[in-house]
Image (cartoon, rainbow over all chains, first blue to last red; front, side, top):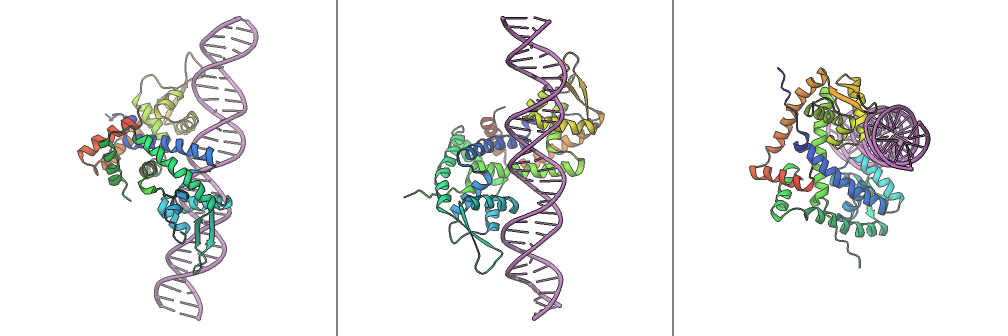
Length: 146
Length: 146
DNA sequence: TTACAATAGTTTCGTTTGAAACCATTTGCA
DNA sequence: TGCAAATGGTTTCAAACGAAACTATTGTAA
C-alpha cells in the first residue's frame, strides 16, 4: 500500500522561503520600477559599483559581487549605460574587459535608493524582536554563506 | 555634500533572502525537471491536490493554496492533464468550475517526490542547531503569515 | 425576464530569463 | 613563435512569466 502522506506545503521550508522572498522582492522591485525606472538587477549593479568605487569594476566582477549571471549583468549594464547612469570604458591593458563606474546620474540614484532600501529592511525587521533578528542573520550565515 | 554611504548588498536582508531562496529553489527545480519532467509549479499543484484530496478542488482553490496566480495554475494544469497526472471534470452545479483530482499516475509521482522534498528540507535543516530551527519557523511565521 | 456585475478559467501579448552559441582578445605552453 | 584553450562580454533562441483581454457561466436585483 503506497504511502500517500501528503506534503504540507505551507509548512515546507523551501516553499515558505520562496513565498517570503518573492513577496519582499516584488514589493521592492515594483517601487523601484515605478519611481526610478530601475529594475532589481540594475539596482544591484549600481549598489555594487557604489560600494567598490575604486578604479572601476569589470562586468565579471559585478556578476560575482551580485551573484547574478553574466547575461543578466550584461543586459542590466546595457540599460544603465544607455541611461547614462553608468560610464563604460575599455580596460587599458585588456581590450576584452570593460571598466565600469557610476556617473553623476548613477550616484544620484544610489543616494536616493540606498536609504530607501535600508528603510525597507528596517520595516521588515521591525516585526521581529531582538533575538529573532540576531538569529535571522545567524541562520542566513549558515544556510547561504558568502 | 551627498551621502554616498554605500549599501552593503551582502548584508542586506532582502537580498540575502532572495539569494538563499533562489539557490534552494533552483536546485530542487532542476532535480524535479530532470528526474520527473516536472516543473516547480506543477509539483505545487500536485502537492495541494494530494493534501486536499476530498471531492476535488477547483483551479481557483489550487491557486489560493499554492499562492500562485491563476494563469500559472492554468498552465500547470494544462500540462498535468495532458500528461494524465491530473483528472479534470466539470463541476456538476457550476459549469465554469473544474473538478481536479490526482490520477493514479499523479499519486505515483507524489509518493516519490514528497519524501524527496522532505529529504531536501532535512538536509537544509541539518546545518542548523535546534534553537536555530525553532527560530527559523518562528521568524517565517512572523514575516510571512499564512 | 432581462440586463449588469461578478466569477472561473483560458488565451494573448509583451517582457524577462537562462542556456548555449558566439565574437574578440588574451593566456598558456609545445 | 604560433596555436589551442581560456576568458570577457554580447547575442540568439526558446521557455517562463504576468498583466490584461477574453469566453463562458452564474449571481443579483430592478
